[in-house]
Amino acid sequence: MTVPVRRLEFADAREAADLGAFLARLIHYDRAAAVRLQAGGGGGAVAVFGRPASFEVLAIRTARLAAPYGPGVLDVTVSAGELLESLDETAGTATVPTAVTGPPWAGVLPPRGGWRQVPGLPGEPEIRRALALSVAEFRSRDEQLTPDTRTRAERDRIGREIWSRTLGDTGLPLRAVHAAQSLGFLRPVRATVPAPGGAPEQPWALLASGGWLRLRTPYGSIAVRRAGLGGGLSVTPA
Image (cartoon, rainbow, N blue to C red):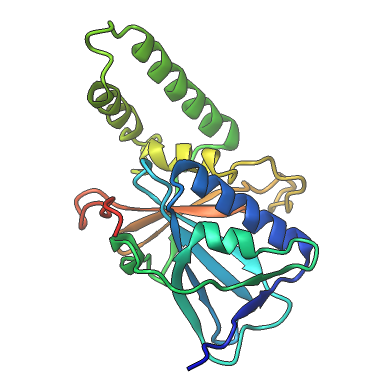
């Protein structure tokens, strides 16, 4: 039986290039990274879910399509590397690779709806400052380790302690902000929509739905399970 080739036709070359950059960053942290793709149902975009190794978060990147995907619905887990290799940025297309056995996280995605904005997210300068201070603290504490104590386990312990702290009073762990920065989601926004009163609108937002928190930016989102509401996702690859 011949399996039909499934193709994604992006709205323009930039959409393909941005998706390629996201996939490359995932592979940088895990050469065997997998992503789950969802498209169809009349929507004009494909959602790409990935789990950057060591961050314990879920990254979501959407790419606009030239036309709604169809016929049928696309919902498949594939190799991030194979999807990246199939991308033709000039043509703005990609071939959907053969499905792979998905890692456990691929079966535990955030809800599609019910998201509400959570107040209290600091402004962009404060978020960047908190991230910079955390990175500096990790480097300082790492440098203070003696040769006998500079083990992978000890460095991981320091990292978990720092990145499990929350951003202000939001409940969002700093590892979500760190992941957003590492995946290119915190790039400066060239233009902002004026808010009432003439002040520029905050380009990032914190949303909640059920047991999930999501840091949304113009370039992608980072979702985490809230502490005490089901725990984190498994990090063991299939």
